[in-house]
Length: 183
Image (tube, rainbow, N blue to C red):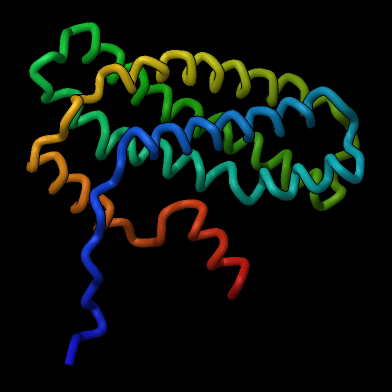
């Protein structure tokens, strides 16, 4: 009889597909933030704010954790890694933390907007513009990551990715949000 902790075997993460999906999600989040910064809150703006308030933090956390803990170590140890590549990885890691800090301010604004407590747009535009600028520069720098991936992952890399995925306390984003909403 299998124990409750028995997990089915995982398939190794397809890094290229994961990067593409994450990039698409982050671009959609940017579009939502930009729409709220550009237009006064409306019924549609309320819905966008509600969605963004739910996805901004967990999607960024998953983005940063995947890159910092799983992707960057693989790139860093590749034979073709240069000092410029290491500098880029270090920069992106620092930006993950910086953007995360600034996004906490955005989350407060989004929650106030959803709750109807936002009386002025004065705080929205500069805060959202600053975060959007940071995110866009970060995405532009990240564009180089796919070209840095080894053509074929070594077995140790596949094993490390499997261990990283198995170590996640919650299901990966956005599955974690779907499960939260169903409960």
